[in-house]
Image 1 (tube, rainbow, N blue to C red):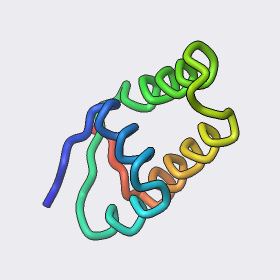
Image 2: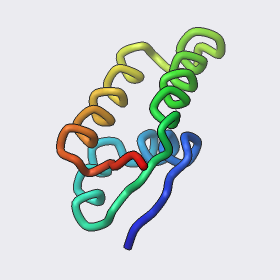
Image 3: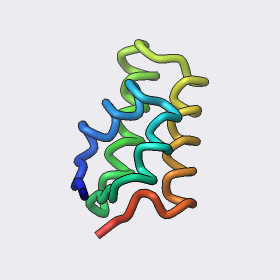
Length: 78
């Protein structure tokens, strides 16, 4: 199966699954739009800076998971 994820869906998956998303992504194809990474960065910035509902360390951890998805080519941009 393949899925096209927008920024909202991907942030929720990252928040809910954490590193488990790496295992799930090996069994399916995940696609994102070109601007999705920027939108995720903006969303995490907003959670950390403006809303103060997330610690900076947690946001950096999610960015690291996202980076691993991209480096392992488990998340493809169209």
